[in-house]
Length: 486
Image (cartoon, rainbow, N blue to C red; front, side, top):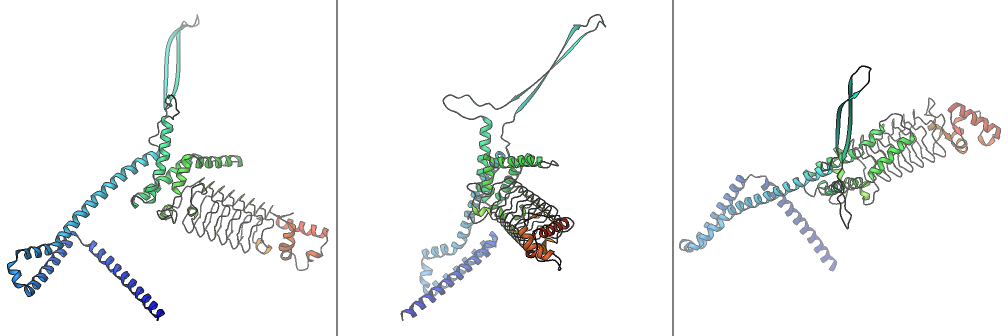
């Protein structure tokens, strides 16, 4: 009996919930239809409602209270009030809506002025300029030049250059800063104050302009260093110096402020703000950015499934960043730290990964066709089923890398470290035209993974060979492939 009652109550509760949901849905539909009406149509509908109410009340009172209807003036006043209520309510609604709209417009104007001022400060338009004054003084005089030609002439020219800076004011008893330092502090503060606009706290209309301003500010900050990278034939030391410059700027107060705002989460703290602007992400410049800066949420490192074609991540700290199924074709990831990054199924066609650190990165099923991986560090990287055709892996370190079923047709593995990596001769022989010259493997790998598939059918098994014969076999293998066995 108790169970039956509980079941009945549960069914009744479920039915009540369903009815309530249907009621809410109907209300929502009616509200949407009502909002589509123009003001004239709304007044017309209210007039019809008033007419229906008037006819209904008139009929009721004529049938039930005919004498009261003829003699009572108060009753007629009551009927008039009730009948006019729908029209009065609609008119009141118009006025209330108009007042709210005016308040909203005023709020938008205030927010717009604030945003414009912040934009000016972020751009550095308020920073005091350094004045340079050039002074040129010319003096002409006479000097006796003797008996040679009897001409008397002397011209003296003096050039003076002075520079005027905003000087630190003289104070007694406490330290302060000058005009320029204060302007820089204001610029950094303005970047942080852009966060509510970028997040959408003041409406969606400010989000895109705020994003444009922030990403442009980052690119402008790193532009001088990136221009140096365009110089041809840079040495390793010169490239390292540029990387250190990028990192230094990224760790500066301005760089930290821009990093915190650009890598901020949405209002619900569920995902990266930039995910709301997928069309603006291709060719984005985030060179040198530190994704592990203190205060950056872990959710900000989820960049999976995004179109990041042509993005500039040079020298960026991208450890453990999620790039699963992202489009990174043509992306510049030179000298980037991608340790333990997830790049499964990522499209890295023609991506530049020179000198990148990809140790323990997951590159399973990634497309690295024509990718530049010279000097890349791929220790313990997972490259199962990856497409490395035509990829340039010169001098790459693939020690202990997993390369099962990797597609290596026309890949360049010259001078690559292939020691103890999971790779068989069946896959490695796809590399032709001297693409293995100078690469290194260990003797155990040669004996277990390469020799059984490389040797002729008539050749002896490795275990039966003498030490001298083994040396001869390894020498022959080196002559054919150019690979070194250690």
